Image 1 (cartoon, one colour):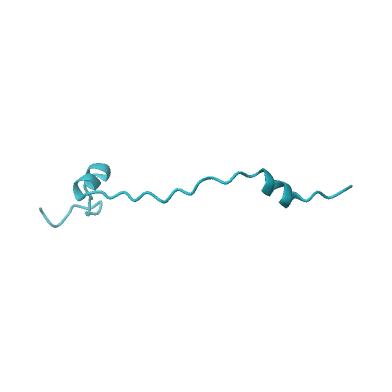
Image 2 (cartoon, rainbow, N blue to C red; image 1 turned 180 degrees about the vertical axis):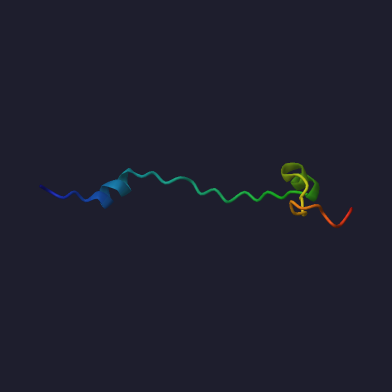
Length: 51
């Protein structure tokens, strides 16, 4: 049984994609709160601090 040169054949068949730089997305504080909602900092027991 013959061994095939897999690396050479696979390199020839792989087409390189054009480089795309990463996209940087910035969110405002308001947009973040809209996505994740307000944070809850109290434990399951009644909160001792009233807002």
